[in-house]
Image (cartoon, rainbow, N blue to C red; front, side, top):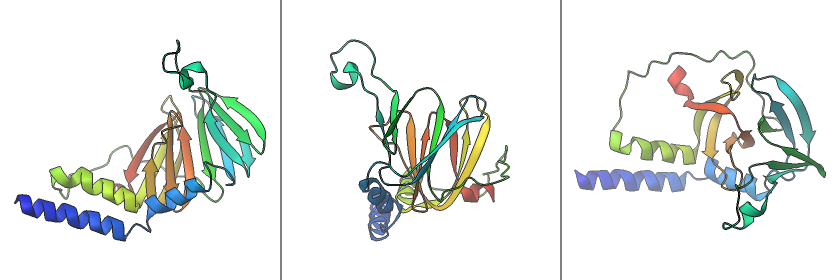
Length: 202
């Protein structure tokens, strides 16, 4: 039984490596082009009630921390800054507290999408010890997902979908999630969201 599990795990890992022209590699290539640099993005800022309060578009965008001493020196008193410093075509924008979505040009929200409030997942099955590993491998390859985004008050503000979606959490950008959706980047900052396998809702 143990040998069978090892064979299954080895097969899945080999399958992942052979298919890795996949989302993980496409995502890495996108990041290597520069952390948002050189990519055309629409930046949307929302308040707690999911109202869009600001929209910017730019072709050269960078995002980083507006650091203080505590970010650089662990022994420095005080808390590390989580303030974002955003540069849009050479102009600076500093922001904290708002929900911000960075969507690469060509990546649009799904119009008139009604997210289900009840999903029946009683059918089918799975092998519990391997489920998380399998889902992680599928994430590396890219899988069809639906992303439902809400404001920090829980009010829905938008939905994105893609056939090949890869999810990461950037180490250098606090409170931010990065998704590669069919080769295009989506950054979500300070928002509530649910990322579901799309087939859960079919």
